[in-house]
Amino acid sequence: MSDSPIESRRCFYVLPGQSHPDRGYVPSIVVENEAGHSPLVGRGELSEPWYWGSDYEEAKRVCAKANAETFGLTEAEAAEIVASSIRVSIVSDATAARRRSELARKLGRDSPV
Image (cartoon, rainbow, N blue to C red; front, side, top):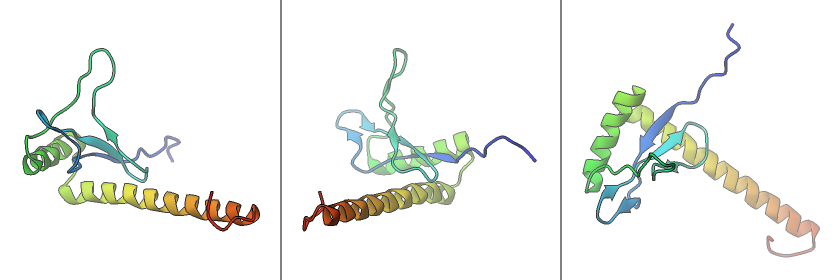
């Protein structure tokens, strides 16, 4: 048995609203079972933002090709990773809302803090 942890799958993802008006769509990295995404906007001295496609359909095609070439993922597998991230976000938001409501009740308030 191996002691090394299993690495979570990752994929590229393009959000419809995540575009630069002059350069195109900025992809993100999504990690399986982790809430959120990390836009590839460029950080550090030698990096720059990534831009994929001047329209959304082109950006999605570039994304699907990059997922296949980089991570060996089909479009369905990438969609599973994105769905797992959304699920974690929803659960996390619901848990936070429940905790705010519990605290409000303890403080004698009608609405969450």
